[in-house]
Length: 117
Image 1 (cartoon, one colour):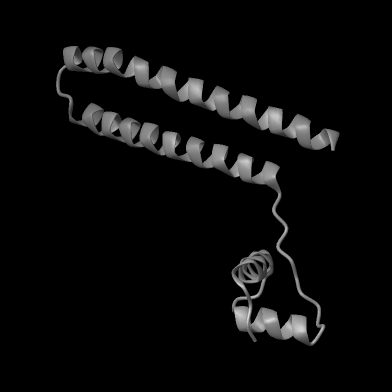
Image 2 (cartoon, one colour):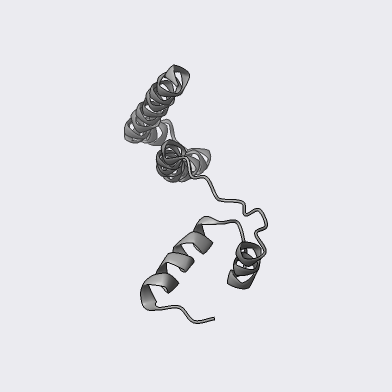
């Protein structure tokens, strides 16, 4: 079977939209007029997943910093060291609560959009 460039590109586009793992499987189904499953992409879910992955990355970084801070707390010997540690980590605490608020706001926003549909 021979295809020109435009036909090849169109075939490839349809193949990639299907759930077939191999082009030969896709072509065989088309030729034999068998059902082909098409992938369905929910764009709003894609956007949500991007946001969630960003939140996950940021929370992992904040969590690592927090674990390091707690480890440092366990190694402190004097009360003055503890006071300095507490002052230094107040900023990290604020970042954690700000990020949690951001996540909750985004989840509420997504919930309101999805519950309208």
